[in-house]
Length: 577
Image 1 (cartoon, rainbow, N blue to C red):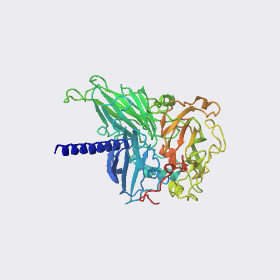
Image 2: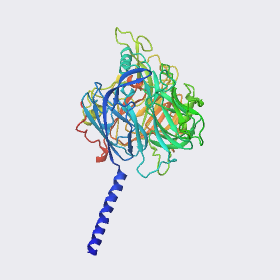
Image 3: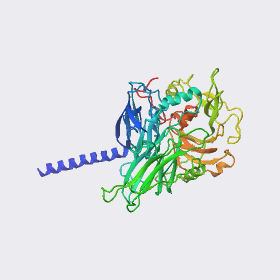
Image 4: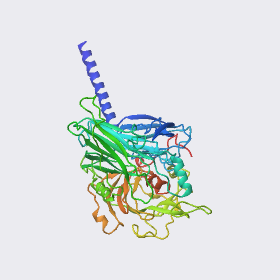
């Protein structure tokens, strides 16, 4: 009997050991997390104005997605509204899962009314804050939400463990229907109307009329460290952000750790994310503090020149104590056009570049590209009066003077099925056809060329891309977002890029790695990346008005030779046009 018991115990221990190892392995490789997004209309009131907006699950902003590095996400999107819908998982690398990337008519046809599509992808080698948003027309004005990517279980942050983590997502509130706004602008060729308020987590805050009750409040304890996950979901504005009488420590941008540095103010472009540590005061301060965001504006067009405010409130040792009579402190934000602050801030961003988190910057470049990015014009249609720069022109935007025309079929499917004829061409110029003084006096002819032109490159090409801002119709900052890849920002400067002198100043040791970068107003930025992800990848300005005007293109990355270097077929429920 004792022998039988001993054998049973040994067998039981062996089975437990196997199960235990399987649990550990499952934790290492991640788990599958399921979400359901019901796209539906919801009445929402802000600024004493009620309107029906497109939401996910009736929430504004939309629900938070939480995952760990290595997890698979399966997100079922059901469209219950009249609008066509796509969702983009902003910043997710989408390794060989380009079918789940989301931009309409680039990665997929839209999900039509009554239709369903399941986005299925794995988070590979990323941790930090990303976000999701609609990627069709201007619907991301209300369709957006945070994505929190935690490290693998048991792996600590490379900075002090925070007491609490809080997503702060900046957005805009429009009393008008944003679809009507951009449709009107497209029709007239003029600049679109601007938003009525900025928001923090969907709330405009006490500086706007009728909004004192709609103020985001962050309640904190003294002597604690909070991780604020900042996301700029605004359609058309870079934003400065600061908290009165508090210093922020930047530790992560676009889900990549950076060397920590302290700052009182951050700059964040649409599309970007920034994680900061907020260390609260050691003792109860007997005051409340405003956290404020307002635009950084460089162009000559109109913009929403207002300020969103939230409240940082310390929990009193005696909870019944009122905070109404406490002094209220406001932060001092940079001037609206403080380009030097923006340049200084972005120059402080550096990758950790250590053994655990290396900066794998491409040292040898296979292909060099030089893209001018900026505004231009199209002639007004015959027998029309337009509201562009003149009454005979319409606003346009372009890369190397090509204004991208959206196709009516998905580029990715056309590429995969080798049926690109009539859908796109691969002859986007790799440098300007007619060089000029890009940041000086604009040329007399500001007309652009319209077309669906892309760049095709072999698998695993190492790319250097210099993006040069132009002063045509005014120099302004352009936040460029690349789908499918992170890139390293190896250099930036003002004026015209000098191909003989400027590369000598590149940082190839610890440049910041991100997915969205601001091309400086009246300047240039140089990025490098490995094209190691087969598919068709959108690149565009994240100012929605500039994307609507054509400041966008796509990279076609061909399949590699090995099976794990090829794009698999589309899923069975892939939407049809």
